[in-house]
Image (cartoon, rainbow, N blue to C red; front, side, top):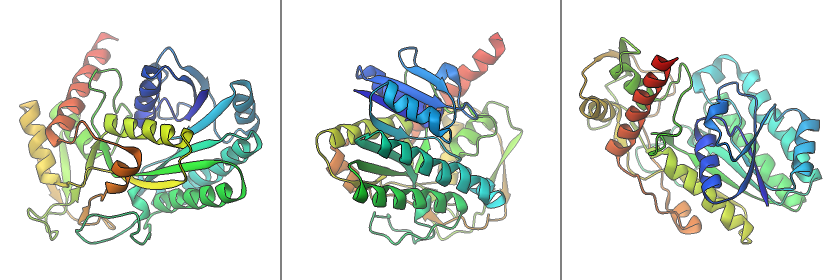
Length: 330
């Protein structure tokens, strides 16, 4: 059996590919390398440089490598960018996924795992968000992901395949073995930005609002270690192969940390101080986004190993140190 991983040279996708290789799975990665890196793909995996929107290429890969499962990470992921360029996001995340699904159905691939997002929920209160919470995405990014969930549900009802959609909360950290990490230039994730500021790659960083109804006034998010998320994907694959039914599940820890707590952790772990500017709120930022992830734990038998903010920050900062060494060696 061979797994096709779209976007497998990117941040989350590459961690999952390493997980597959460690499990002795046969892996084909399809990535156009717009934000991913060829060096992030393990040598044991086959890297094909191409676009999921290329229907003939996708069909040939599904048939040539006898793919039994597709794990779909490829797509655009920056919320503010999606607001500025909504049609680009609907094209990359929705239209191209429709092309991919058409090929999957035609090739009779049995299993599909989709990289979804907590952005499908939109604005809710401070309580943890469960999967039965009403979905009301407030950005083209969130809506493009929700549309894909709808397509998966409808296509699965009509054709012979099962799917799992994992709704990520705030993914952070890096491979504890130092093989891969968040390497995209201009990344907007808070922990990445804070680590880059600690490294001196940025002169300062911003806190967008300190007047939210939270204990310290800054936004609260549920940060999940990327390696725990990779394991969740592998468990989802095993569940589908064992005859599991369709599943949409949150991936988070059920514990939130504020922006200020994250910055304090980065300063403490790095041993470096840096300037933080307090700015106005950004439109659409919820006060808190925390997962109720009981369903994933129960259905996937998922037991996170790195559910600790300092561990997440330590691995993220160590990756920044490694990137600096690699850049200095060039």
